[in-house]
Length: 222
Image (cartoon, rainbow, N blue to C red; front, side, top):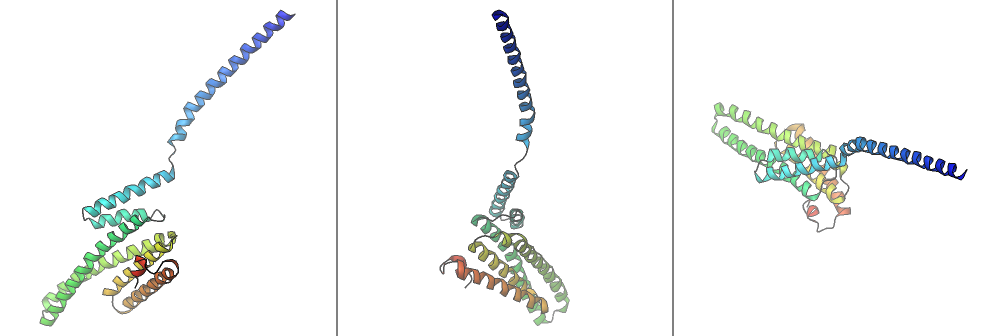
C-alpha cells in the first residue's frame, strides 16, 4: 500500500545518503594522503631558477669581495644550466674571467720582462728559476683559457639565440684564443692565432647582419 511504499522510499533515501557519506569520507581520505605527495614533488623548472638565482647572487658577492676565482665558479654553474644568459649574467661571466685572466697576463708580462733583463746581464743562475716560475704562470693561463673556451663551445654558443649574444660569445672566444697566442710558441702559437681569427670573423659576420653599426658590441670588434 501507499504507507509501505513511502517507508521503502525513505529507507532507500537513508541508504543512498549513507553511501554518499561513505564515498565523501573516502574521497577526503584519498585527498589527504595523496595531495601532500603531489605538493612535495619538486618542480624542475623552479629548482633550476633557484639554483640560477643563487649562483648569480654568489657571483655578485664574490665580485664585491674581489674574489674572482669564486666568481668564475659561480657563473660557470649558471652557464652549465644550458640556458640563454641575460645581459647581466653575460656581463658577470665576462668580468669574472677577465679579472682572473688579467691578473695572470700582467704577471706573465712582468716575469718575462725580468727574464729579458737577467738574460742581458748573463745571470744564468737566476734564469732557470725565472723560467720555471714563468712556466707555472703559463700553465695557469692555459687552464683558464681552456676552461672558458670549453664553456663557450659546450654551453654558451649553442644556447645563444640572439645576434647580440652570438657576437658577444664569438668575440669572447676570439679574445681567449688570442690570450693563448700571447705566450704560446711554434705551432701552438700559430693554431691559437688562427682560431682567434676564425672566431673574430664569425663575430664580425653575424654583427654585420644582425647588429646596427652603432651597437657597442659591434664597435668593440673594430
